[in-house]
Length: 424
Image (cartoon, rainbow, N blue to C red; front, top):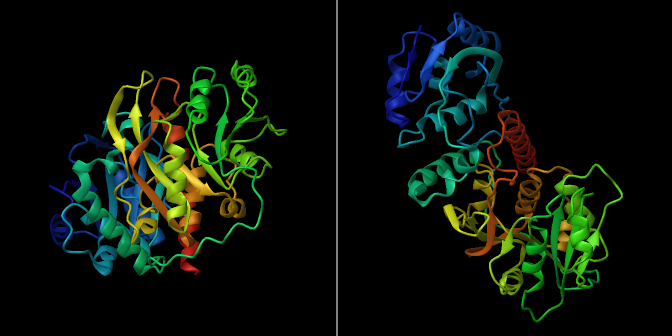
């Protein structure tokens, strides 16, 4: 037995390997990675394939555990590691789209998953060199890099076809956002969950307070029991538009803090996101966002942002505008990518019907998926927001255990959403 290395991941290359293999298992490897199989790797992968009737298996590497595959693990960037075992019989049974230039293996995997299990072996069966040495904070933006646009269009097409085959595809027909039946104290509220951001919280709040509008707004800061000077700074601002909430509970994540804001008597008709270490780009952001919310029957609007360092100098990838979104297919493609962008703004009446999960990662993605199932989401493609990447930012250089936990949770959110869409 041996690992074979496709020259590329086109349909033609993958099909040639499937046609040429002389056993019931094809072991595919990544030519960019040095793989050192353990003494029983091939036997173990073949055994699990045969015992379970799976169509695809993958395994942990030495010092690199992976996560289990779910029906919601449809993103093309799922980390199987640099070697997988594919049932040749299952592959021939399921077929492959012959037109794929880059996504042949991705298409095959999705087709196999529709009829067979994809099984992780939670055992370190091999060792391997690092595939991509870039930090997670850089890799996470590959799918919005305009240089990768043709690749992403193909991946979207493959994922969309999969959703259609399993009965989870949504057509571009949207429910009308119901008129508000409740009274709101202001037109818009900025929601800022915060814990221990003494270095940035004042600038964040000030970027909201300087907004020039012809409607009333406030700033709801949910201070999640900060232990540094954050609470002191907030109490010293002295502007009645700032509503400083300290939750009674001590077990709230970011999503739980959002719930404290949106269900409070302070919350306006629209709730607009601002992270405690970020800034609005100028004083016209609220006018732009509210105008977009009211231009169509939108339950949610997502803007675009510019990545900057702590000194507000632009850093790669620069503008993140998520132009992969389309009215026709955005809510389907949202199941393939890891996020919808920022800043996010919501119709509060709709948001109160859903609420946020009490977590500190993926809470926004969960709400966006749920909203998109029923309602249209509007987009703003010019930058309205500065996202600061700095040494204290929680998304930079995530440890493997944390990255795995985050990926597994988002896959679970996709699993739930796919199941709900299949039941419509």
